Image (tube, rainbow, N blue to C red; front, side, top):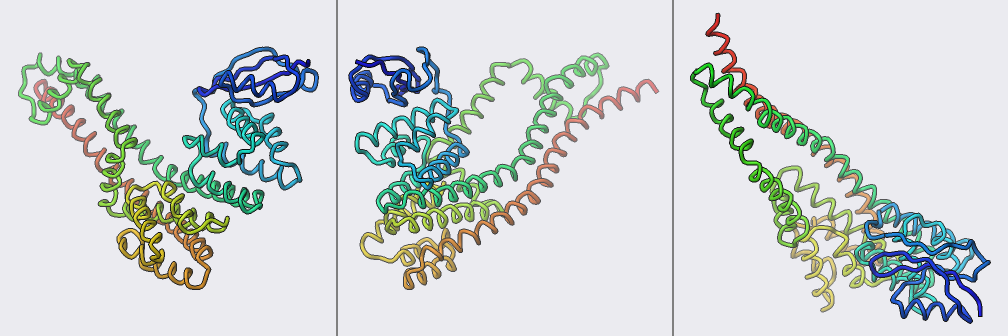
Length: 406
């Protein structure tokens, strides 16, 4: 009988550390399985650092893009150095700074010891790992080239992360400008105008129409705080509705596709993700149907998802990819469709898609610059007009009031 130190996680992300007396390590695994706990680390007392019974929460943690990149790169490096997957996971578990990552990697190790593939664990955590992630790992396991596939996945994740950062950076300045303008408007409506109302009433003067309108809005907002809170809650709820529901996302994208400059950016971002994802999946050894199926979630655009899904059904009936895409020329440019046809005939589809992913990524950079140039003056003009109207509504009565005493 020996004493084992264990570290495990439950389904909610609660990390439990403790001791258990058993004949062998497998008995500890069975004990934890009965408790519905996921083993992260099990070792004999004295072989590692003794840890006291403790609890920590991973409930509020998440797996960031950086976490996924580091996981893949480190796993590829350790396997390439000659370690087996179990040894590699042991190192990653010890180095993981997040309890959630420890739990996921611990379950991956446990599943591998039970004969399940590594990809099965990541497919269980679909909330944190996209389909292309465990799809590429599954392809690497099937081909016996897991280290090379992990390196390809690392490059894919880095490019995707950089693309998202470019988009967020481009929208940062307009968003800051919008928030600052809303803050100035709220300050004038809630604090400045109500203070001036008393002065205007005591002067018994005829106020300009614009001043009357804005004073009415200001008085209503100040005297109805419940309405203000309900309006804020409604705006927040509407944002979440558009973000979380299929209909909301489709409607939002449909609106974006009607705006000049923006629609080109939306299309090209989806095309970058599609061509890059499918190219990586085909390079890892997956079939065209498998690659297209996994690409559906990667594009991040419901219109492209539906088009690819319907194309998959056509391809299953023997229709070439290029021909199936000709039904969606509003989404897939003719140049891309024609080059896909060439790639299918010559067996170079993977290289064609990679070339186009690089091309569209450059186009996205150019469109982001155009979008920033397009948005900044429009936002400045709109916010300037609104703030100017409020300022004018304040200054006109003040000039009238001063004029009475001159």
